[in-house]
Length: 204
Image (cartoon, rainbow, N blue to C red; front, side, top):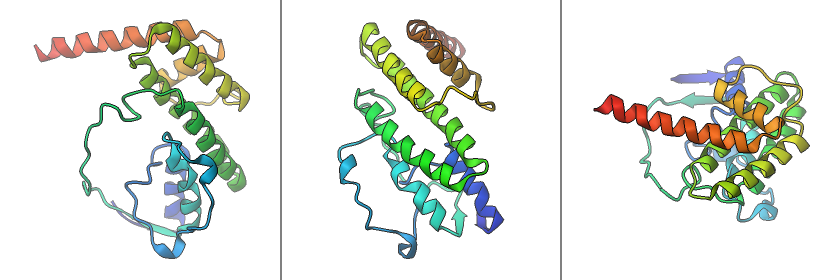
């Protein structure tokens, strides 16, 4: 918590590109740096990872920020939200948003392209987690995992291999890379079942 400027802003930049602080809804921005002219009509209707369309640009324009470690909003759990219910069109929004994030990262150079690649792998992992818990039949889940794998392969997320990601994300990435989508789905469902049993055991 506190005020950051100059070199302190670099920490915020890193947290955006490594995927820790990508949400726009929890940020207040001065009108003096807010550019309302960009045309986002080509992305109309996208509902997943859309925050990445604007946040990298806002981050690049901001020279200081203040972080409040307080709850300033009211969150309502939505069983049909993007973190609970998978929709096939999420991959379209996800790929468009990450393309913008990667381009910004490459324009900044230094450590940012590598951070953006890590962020992309983490976000793919989150998307896979939502997919694995969806009511979609197993065959449909495996088909969607294959689509996610093709996207990751096309944009070069598998090579060179990144470090500093969680074991769960690492396993997901490696199984996708090896085209073991069926095995990945089985492992995720097994993990979720075991986690549920463990939680119930602890509660009792």
